[in-house]
Length: 419
Image (cartoon, rainbow, N blue to C red; front, side):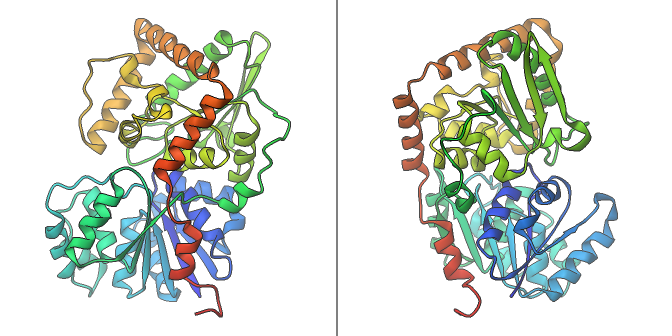
């Protein structure tokens, strides 16, 4: 079976989940199609696919035609939170599995039943007609619509997800919802040695960073703040003589090293399985609070310290996990501006975080508060005993567990010859 696969172009989380799913489907022909940060992650993990078809952001209509042509030659589609790919698959009359680690996150401005009714009357003569039919939906509502239109939905467990799945079930329409545990590369995690000699004293994982608003050169105040802070991290923490700062902002020509007081930080992007080895072996771990990276850390038995929010989904994650050791300990911009209210909206909330990061970067007094309060967070984190760290990992495992994703996928997309 030929499976066309794609992921939402927001950070490395969706693309990482796609790689994990693809590796579970190695008995089939797997074709990736996508662009931007999703394609960047895929290029770093080429062994997870049989074919990689990257679409340049400037190709416009030609890129859409390439996707449609691939769908015509495919038997099955797997979309990780990419609503447009799911919609194109429906128009192409291809069964689609919608994979989602943020199923409870999507904000609805209208009743779910209204979105269901729109999907039920969707014109399927062309993508243009279908897109026009759904034009009133927000970007979040389009992801929910994609679930209603999909053949199957594989959704990762998180506070609020079971309730939304029950709401779908009560409608009696839409895809079959399959609740799973972590959607991560479990084979790689099982094969990652936990007792390897550490190359670094501290790992800082900033993720893919790019999304619908953030970019490496535009709306990049968070990255400017990060570059400002790294030398001070080396100055303030003699125990961290070797630091690895990993993520999308340090791919290719953006790779760099910073040295201060005989200590050094290497900033680069690693292939996923190399990153997992670093997570397993590095004593201390700072993490942008994305769910995929958090799940990987959890499986490896490592409790990270969350760093300040890059976008609104990070705010949502930290709030929902506020009762856990991880959630309580995490750094937040509220440490710096405790009375600054964020808009309860993905785009507006993310834009507000960009503005806050810019203020902290440019205002010496605010930066001093940022540096001091983050050092306090780090001080508390490094003082945690091994037993306390294990407790933090176990409470996350209890909260976020579910049926193994490989068992779910084996039912939906059985290996060749077992259908």
